[in-house]
Length: 378
Image 1 (tube, rainbow, N blue to C red):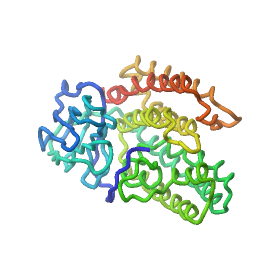
Image 2 (image 1 turned 90 degrees about the vertical axis):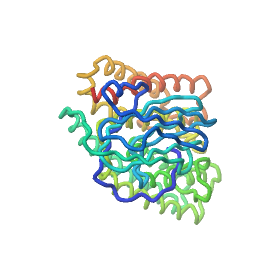
Image 3 (image 1 turned 180 degrees about the vertical axis):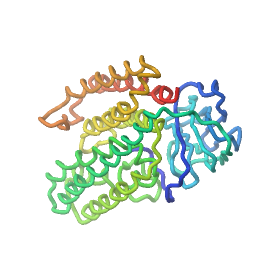
Image 4 (image 1 turned 45 degrees about the vertical axis):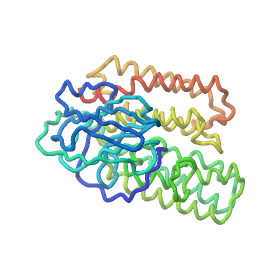
């Protein structure tokens, strides 16, 4: 679940953007065009409004008093590259390969709302790196994986919705966590459309002013906190199915590139760190470890598909990622409570020290995973 944004999203255009995030300005050494972005509580200053196509680097500094998010977006609000949770006084470098076209750089203080935006025109003629043919195979297989996850989600969500419409509280609770797995595995792809996530996966504290609360977490509250199913919940269940059918139809149109796969894997680990480990995501059902596992599986799938190229470009990184994924999965296995792969203990039963151990394991993986995109484009 990402911070909500309300926008009407137009049809996907043919424009493509390959995004790479890293913690260093390595791209400058390759001749990338640097744009200084100074984010504050009510302003977003950029050093230029036009750059040539090719590699573009955003050197971001948050001079505000609250965490911010900086994005490169199309004018219709589709996200093409982003960095969330840039704390006050923090600097970050975001690098992207962009084709000619019109974009916006958005700073979103507090990570809510439309944000403060600056226009960015990308002119033609820039250089783009040649791509290893193995990466085309990885993209094709990941696109199939994302569609497969959406296709598998719909029957599970329909089972969840049916239980609600039948007034079956226990059945709905049982179906809830499993209905979310496909979404959690491929969340960065779903979020790239901008308008679907706020409908299906927003929490109460992520709502914008005037926004109606719908989706999984609204139903989660009804089932576990309110312990009732009424006419409203039955309508919300139907709406969830409708919204996820929209996601299913649109997955095939998503812009997927090797570097967006790599960045998406890191975003999934960030999701774990900021929502699942803290217990905020599933605050009523306490099924956080199921979401946790889904995020890790999705990140590992992207890595596994990119691994042949990473092993060639940075074998030490591949070795470290293999070790850290294995360690995190082994730790997660200790919290299994049943025979199936997704039977986990209720997260409210996981103590403070155990949560810290999980957090440390996530951080140990997140650090080398942040280097994945750079290894792909070497």
